[in-house]
Length: 309
Ligand code: NAD
Image (tube, rainbow, N blue to C red; front, top):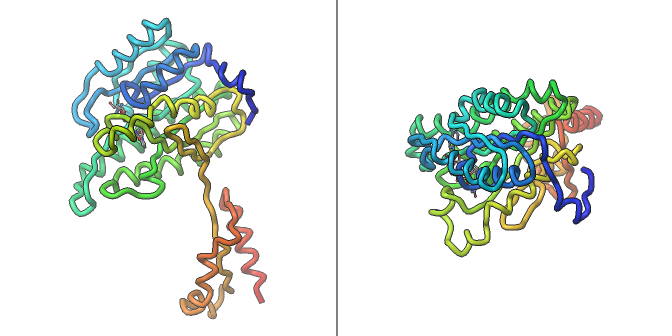
């Protein structure tokens, strides 16, 4: 990534670009929308306006943010569609501003419930909003990105997806899906200068206000997730793609896969469960880790296995 000096990083601007932010009626999405508008972008403020459990709909959430942006001299239009109708959201951008440069897939809901009590509806709705929603928006933006050979995508994962979280099997599955989705978008988009990254944010919002104490939430302002997103989607980022970042409260760090030393067994009749058990320590040995980035790394290991005496 191009290195910015302190002075120039403060000046990151998005004049003439169109940024679509889904779920921008509150929380993190609102913080993104207001920031990008303040830095010269045309912003599509999408929000269905329902409850955090995905019930109901209202145009108010998006309208309030658009009014705030306009009052500050910025450019924004509202869109009230569900992200499940991503094509309508991208259409709003094209009709209002003639282009789309940045897509921030941020909209989300929760249906927390223990796995024992999980109903199909709880599972399906979370998948629809998070997985299908991110897909539909990116799918509609993709032809525009390819044609103009420019596009920046942010997908939103969660610590729940990366590490698991009690009562959130549905949400965890949907959030880790964002990682695989992003990693493949990054690979397919590279040739067309389309970069895609995924963030696992932590911020005070209506989603977290009931599960975290006020003094913790005070240090988790949504505004403190914005700089990472701005850096990743700015034209000065020409390389950072397919990466996972955790961020919140002033902490930002990249996460990556780590592979243990592993066990190598000859793939013949001697490869039994007992033979594997005798090499189990290696399976768990992280003293000399490697950091795989694709299946090619695995194929190299297979070649090593072929060479075993
Ligand atoms: P939030 O509830 O304040 O914001 C989510 C917004 O998405 C809401 O305004 C909601 O109306 C909108 N939305 C919901 N369903 C929609 C749909 N179908 N179509 C369009 N808009 C829809 O919550 P937030 O904390 O700002 O969450 C933003 C994103 O960050 C979510 O994807 C969430 O899962 C993720 N996230 C948040 C945290 C956190 O600590 N706040 C942690 C991990 C991940």
